[in-house]
Amino acid sequence: MRSIIIYKSIHHQNTEKVAREMAQAIGAECKEVSQADPMEIAGCDLIGFGSGIYFSSHHKELLAFVTRIQSLKGKAVFVFSTSGFEELVFHETLKERIEERGGRIVGEFKCGGWHTYGPFKMDGGLQQGRPDRMDLQNAADFARSVAAALR
Image (cartoon, rainbow, N blue to C red):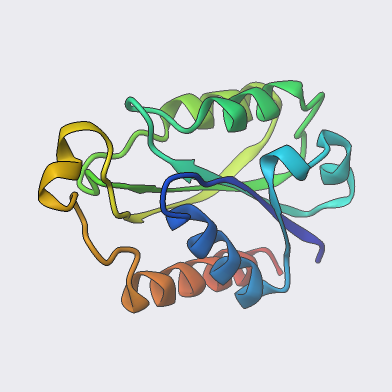
């Protein structure tokens, strides 16, 4: 099974850590969205898309990338995110774009991410130390379970 994980990660590389852990767990290719080509996903059976959450949504570059994909028909897709507000889930916009292109959402993952944007920087930020080792283990376990369900 060919898999790819495409992500956008800025500030503290929270999402990159999660994406790389997932990719290693399932033997997937892992690419930052600016280095990815929508045509690369044509031969993939499982695709992961993720970023930090910015103003209640995934990063605009990731959303634009998904919009450029002609078709995800028949593709199994999971979404993931890191956020300073871990209890809130903001995956709907990304999921809608995936489903508009025929993709089938097979799972979602979220975890805390060190957040020092704006006023939160003054106190050292939210979710300090996240993603931590347990978050990364959970990310790997999630990816393995999604991949196993498709085999």
